[in-house]
Length: 509
Ligand SMILES: Nc1ncnc2c1ncn2[C@@H]1O[C@H](COP(=O)(O)OP(=O)(O)OP(=O)(O)O)[C@@H](O)[C@H]1O
Ligand SMILES: [Mg+2]
View 1 (cartoon, rainbow, N blue to C red):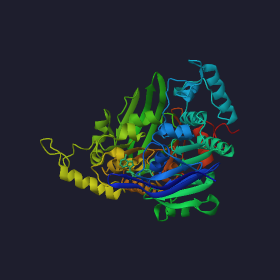
View 2: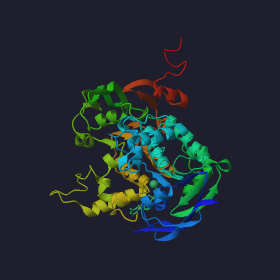
View 3: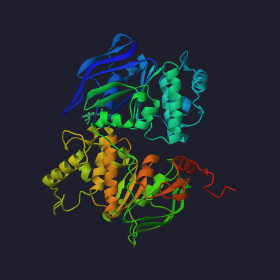
């Protein structure tokens, strides 16, 4: 029997039909993967199911009964929970406190702390979550925080758990651990809906695949065993996409970006320890590593966002130091790690975000400081077309864009400035395969036009296909340097966790 049936759901935003009469159903005990391009309507459909947004028309049936959701509280009470990409945990609280907050057991008028702890402990054991219930959330890795979010849903007796791009921020090992947990939940009768842009993961995990395109349902009963990833990508974007093509650099030039003795302290701890790096003109240097091993600090030092304890940096032989506007002025482009915190001003329009940091250039700003609106409009329209930013108007606030389209705004802004050096973090996080192909192509074109590119990515496939040289960052140090193809995915994975692959290091006797 269908556990959930959503019938003819339509959701209209000003200028956009986000959902156009979508029928969607979910069975008990299945893992359903929801696929579609950026802006296809995946998040919107799930927000409707979670009571976060009201559809213009359509209805929902739950266990055969009509369901009216006025807010997420109604959904949670019915056993429908959603884990968002930006976790909503309190860092200074323990795991247990985060899980029970708002749903604490009581003994009379008092909180029953002992009972809360016991119940959380039981859940952790039942589903093998491997997490300490007393530890403070601020001390957990991203993957562990996500498990706390799932525990929170289970504690509220969720029958349906919705995960919106849960693997985007996880390491390969964490993804595997998450999948083990999700399969256990399914086998115990829960239903899981997972949104992801990673087709490999969908093929591995899903029982059934549903595809949305432009707010419409294009397929709702695809079985992973019966399709190839190529067929899936054609369903999503309407054409073939191949992300595995390597295009090695042909014209590697002189050293462009040279970093020596970089040490960055954070709260009294060295996060980057005496790192030296060189990136040549026309070369992509990939930095592989698990997040939290100094990537953030490395990126900040190379873009003027933090003052390192020590660093000698040169760009084409000239010393470079100062704040980020100096770096921008000298042609160092930056695609930041966290697009919401660092890359975009949410309240501002898409067009203003497209020139953010570059708005003082003569072509956008006249002598008296007057902005040249017509020039800005024309420029924004051009980038919107080129980078496939899906919006009815570049005057709309950037916050109205879907997640992947927000990322495209940053990429468009930085890539269009013909940078001499590019510091790029997770360029395709949350971006659909069609756009990944486009962004990869752009990165290669910028490289071939002579820029030096430093690429930090948690996506090993991405690092391996794009890089001309790969270093591994572990605990603030570079522990390996290799050419693409020299080390396998497994070997790189081992180096990222601090072990040395057999036969590749001095530990081999
Ligand atoms: N609050 C809003 N105001 C205006 N338009 C919106 C709003 N939220 C979403 N939209 C629009 O609705 C459409 C669907 O957005 P949605 O976030 O559901 O896409 P998505 O499939 O989740 O994409 P992504 O893969 O990029 O996360 C997009 O065109 C988006 O711009
Ligand atoms: Mg989304």
